[in-house]
Amino acid sequence: MSLHDDAVLVLKGYEGQDELRQVYLDHLATHPDGMWKACGDGHITASALVIDPSRERVLLTLHRKLRMWLQMGGHCEPADETLARAALREGTEESGIAGLTLLPGGPVRLDRHHTPCAWHLDVQYAALAPDGAVEAISDESLDLRWFAYDEVRSVADDSVVRLLEATRARLAT
Image (tube, rainbow, N blue to C red; front, side):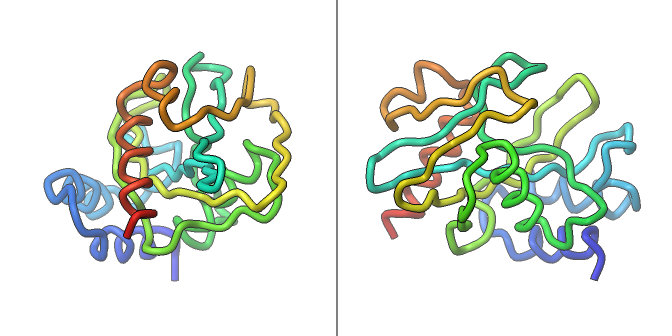
C-alpha cells in the first residue's frame, strides 16, 4: 500500500473535525502528489507531540525557520510506509529520544496551517516518551525543552495548545 493510500484510510477512519477531514480527503483525491513537499497546492505532513504523562510535561522544539515552539513534525519522506511511522520518525529525529511509542487510537487532531513552503495539512499524533528519556537537539531546532502542561499556553500557539488538550483527553479515556 502506498503512503497516499494509507493516508486516505487513516483519514477515513479518523473521527472528528469532519469538515477539515474532508478538506484533506478532497486534497488527496485531486492531488496524486499531495503527500509530498513538491505539491505546491499544499501537502500532508505528520507530527508527534512528545509527552511524558507521568511527569505531566511535553517536549517542544523551537523551530529553526519558524522560530516558534512546536511539536515535532514535518514532511513525509519516500521511505515512510504509513502516516503513523512518518510521525514517529519525525518525533524521534527531532527529539533525539529512542523508544517513543505512539499513543494508541491513531491521530489525535488535524491542523491546517500556512507555512513558507505551502499549506500544511498536518496529521497530528502523540508520542509517549519512555521512562528516563533523554532528549537531544537536532539541526532543525534552535532549542528543545520540556514544558509542564500548564506552561504550554504561555509559550506555544493555539494549535499546540489544542493538540495538548486533545492528547490529555485521549489519555484520560
